[in-house]
Amino acid sequence: MSELVTGEAVALELRPARLPSRALAVLLDLIVAVFAYTALTIALVAATASLDDAAQIAVTIASFVLVLVGAPIAVETLSHGRSLGKMACGLRVVRDDGGPIRFRHALVRGGIGVFEILMTFGSVAVIASLVSARGRRLGDVFAGTLVVRERVPLARSGFLPPPPPWLAGRFAELDLSAVPDGLWLAIRQYLTRMQQLDPQVGWTMAERLASDLAARTGTPAPHGVPPAAYLAAVVQERQAREVRRSYANGSGLRGPAVASPPRPGAPVAGAFGAAPPAFPVYPSTPATPATPATPATPATPATPATPATQTNETAEPTGPAGSTGFAPPA
Image 1 (cartoon, one colour):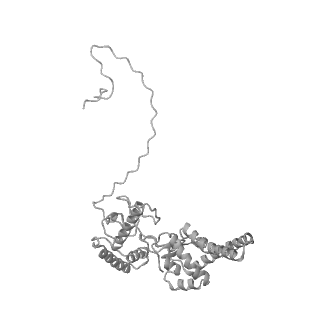
Image 2 (tube, rainbow, N blue to C red; image 1 turned 45 degrees about the horizontal axis):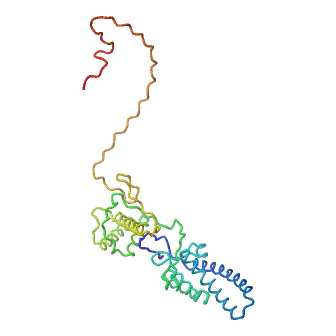
């Protein structure tokens, strides 16, 4: 199944829409357009009853172009590729690179759609969608657009495991400009399905992908790093770069959240395991259970002090042996 690959390599859950869902969306749009055209025609006939035949024909043609051509173009432009039928079916029109469409894209799709949908009753659009690998009609081919599915079941979307924390930031200086989108897609597909593969087969695939990635970047993979962990760390580094670039440009693009690297020393809950610590870690001494407090003894009433005998020498205070009541000098 063909999937959409963007520059960030993070929007893979947007799959191209197939013919049944697209046909249902077009049918819903046509039903709404026919009702709107019928209501507008009745209103125009009542309003232009005093005009001659040529004027009435001109008004009819103008209303046809306005409702069945101009309105869909305006709706797709303002809603960034979503008409009423596409909203109901969970579809959206995007550019080939995954970005939102503009007026020129909607204009080309709408203009060619008059021929391949309205004038040929959809036969040309059906044939073109069946022939195309991603289900595109002629309007999508000439406009450089693609209809994708927005609502994807969560059970079908693979989970991309995060890399170990000891690899966070290790590939910040790696050159990823020469890595093609096909290799990124293969790496992501492997990472999302590696738990379902045989361990020996998965290790072989990871080594092959890691060697291909190292050849494209010009930097060999670090020694002692598992190939699956190396692939996950490089993919996360690319996602982090794309997120920083998008926010630096002020575009505010949405994409899958990039997990922040965990704190040093935090436990790892991933699929690759943790790295051995740099220093030996000794187990801490188990805490001894607290001794239950003994009940306090009730205080005895104080005995009245006897007056000291007046002598020429200073009387020493009563108390423990060797205690003078003052702390000795330090």
